[in-house]
Length: 357
Image (cartoon, rainbow, N blue to C red; front, top):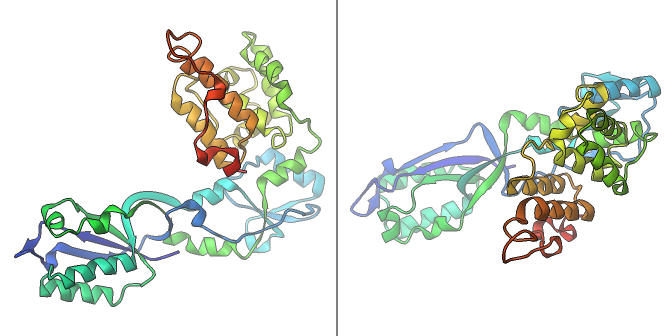
């Protein structure tokens, strides 16, 4: 984590080809700290326990868990588990990937490391592009700035002053997207390094271990039930999804839930306890847009990639849907000239299995 400084440079405030002191505004950002230009840079080094025993243990629950209260009640009954409101009093802390992902936020803003900002200022000085008053102002700030910080730049670097003095080179290769965390959360994040953690999905696996696993070979049968005009058939299919071992069946369940979301909502048991548990686990996989927009296909693959659940089966099934329901009228079996089939479609390298598993 690094300090952030806000720097505003007004390229219109110059005299005799020198930026005046009024052209610069520099302040330390007191609301957030920089994490990195990629989310993976948030390295928390958590002590995650994979081999654990829940019997007579006290648990602390972090926010954003896919662990509904009814399943917590099962833990209490079967394993004599207790829930604490203080992480210091817990044997194990339950955490989720969603919570970890929520710790950092991202923005779009021109930014550079301090050393690059310093080189920019050095160039201004060596080429006599700032007034003596501007030099004094910048010197007073640079002397107290953290040398391992990040500078957020607010400027219009395409203005005449920057162009004619060859200054745009310092901005054109800068990063834009960056991740940050609120300063108010720093203590909470430091606290994470002091506890033993188990993932909510691992607990769900224990709770659901005696439940059936639904495999992709059952796709045709269950999808036909969901597509049925009979509401009772759709309700029965939804009950099957909500009463299976969700983690072990995620490949099939996530696909059916996403692509038949509207049909599954139109059931008798949408608000039952079991189905609510399923809905909590699949938060984010709601798809009310059907199959008519390319963004819905993109989003499904991106969700699975984000959750590290992308498989060859759901890639191939999604490509098949894409051809049948979206591309075919433009370039496919029902098109006039051009033809494409699912095997012709490839994913960008980021989403290919060799780069995700």
